[in-house]
Image (cartoon, rainbow, N blue to C red; front, side, top):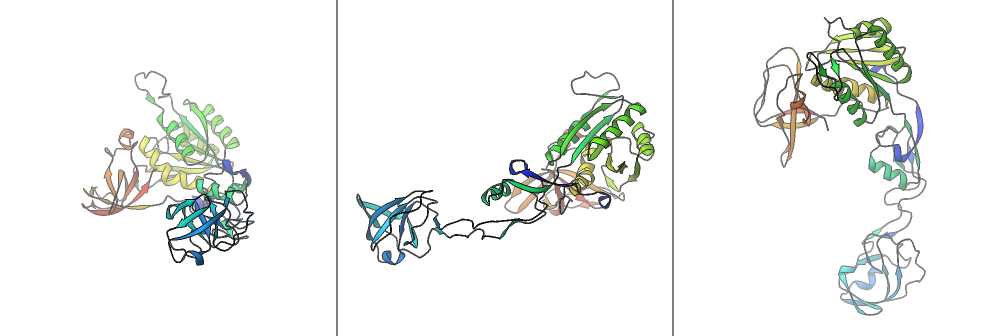
Length: 388
């Protein structure tokens, strides 16, 4: 499936809009970081050789604030009061913390701790040298990366464009959350959940609305979505035995594959294209829709967004009570709660595991991966795909 997806085009964005995007080129530092020797603490800039035999007294001849270069040279037995981040005077090679000193006159300080060359001094280029790679191509940008971009003087960054994902629901039985339920009706929860999942993943989510069971209107909605979005996500009507309006329309206007995947939940899945636009057909049960988005749709959309590794990461967790299951030829994805302990992550089931039981799954922290077989015993360790 991923081999059929293309990475979106490269764009230049402001760093304020860059979180979650992927760098398309490497970013280098045009200058050293930090650009000058500076102090890591408030205190006094000194010559380390003059404060080996302590306590000793020095004359304070200047005060150096952050952002102001020092102007007074230091003579023998002289020092400068200095504030965190300020430039180290050229004649000093160490800083004594203010806590290790005491003023004994208006311009005399007693130093109580012996000095060492370079102590509390942040050297020029200690973080990055001029020309060093600050961010490699293929970096998924996080808030700290944005700070680093600002540090190296980059107000914009070259990235792969954020995918625009259209989400549609169909069915005469579905109603919105604001509509009173009538006999036979259910709430359209999948569309709202899938829109939220897309937004949380950093994609641009487009609500294509709720379309009734009318082939002409479904076809119009899907064709419009394929023309205006980078990808389309639907839910329901993808089982092998279904004759559903969505399946009928997609089979006619798209190049689709209808699959039965050996997993539980989320066995049925469809994937294909309409005029080159990818379409992810997810199952209709709410939990199945959630799980299949994480396992299939998100990696596909990550691929389009330029992620170097689009697949969900996996953690290891211990299950104190064990996790039971019966052998059925499928891999089971059990919704679990995760606790962080001194021994590592611990997983407990989040409640009912039915594919319709969204309430029991909504608070889950991850999906525990259970291979085919009888399950795992108490104290076993399992792979977990985090959901947060």
